[in-house]
Image (cartoon, rainbow, N blue to C red; front, side):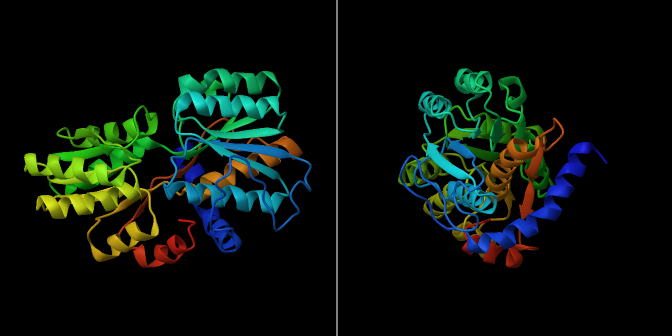
Length: 330
């Protein structure tokens, strides 16, 4: 068994305990750039302030689960958590620099556009502020100077998804990229293509559901050889269902990530399976790891990424997973 697989098994064993704690999380998100948390240990009782910075696109339900995990970890550890986000790489870099300038104790950040964020991450390290990566940037976090990483191996996830489609005879899947420049999304589609050579990518505007549906409907109507659709986020999977209905296609539909509606469609059979990266765990572990590093010098992962996925959700386990999606933690 490889070290990576052992790490994932250890994390998977702990995930149930983390999810049990999720029942007392806020379940929502503040719309302000910076917000503290409350409940559990008093905010700030640990003496640490952590900046939590992502490339979240407003309205994407995926990030609610990341935030819920981070907020629960802050409550459990008494950390003061400062949220901020921007989907534009230069603006996310500014948010990281702002956190450095405000002298936070630690920074947890997504690294979806690593080259654009490299300067601000270096500024944090030069200031002696520990940085951990989460969700995106598994291949770049060490080069940038982040000391820990929590997320899915997106290449592995894409390859595994492609293998499952190939086993069902799929020849021409359409891989839907909903954010330009995302290394994680590109890696997912490349992984699918490594298993199914006929994979075709299509770029859509993930911030506009109507536009996603229209783009996919037009493509599906134009090319009847497409026999599977691979969306890289749960909201886009729901858009794809509408596009399928309008185009009259019987192409199989699979997705990365989950929300309550997507879980319901797995139950109904409209979505074949989801490749879940367990975002709640990413948020929880990122904050907890920084707390332990600051308090006790711990380095979780031993210099290797801690994998939170891929974890497959399909007809065999959907009944168990649905209650957690209703809690907005899975």
